Length: 56
Image 1: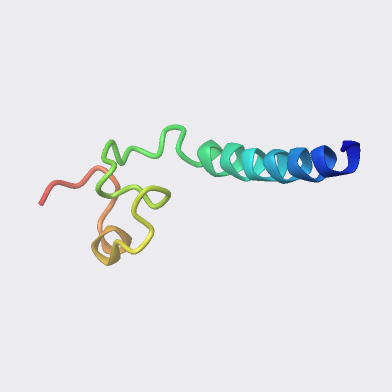
Image 2: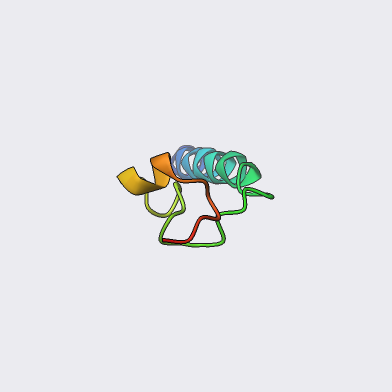
């Protein structure tokens, strides 16, 4: 049981570490929009051409 729990915990720790590191980039990025957020909306082509706080 311990080996199974350890693998599950290691996977969760890795996921949370990635999330923490990705969120570090959000501090003061200025996008103020989940629609333009690269973490929340990674396929946003328009977001790559406009500054984060731009209004359309």
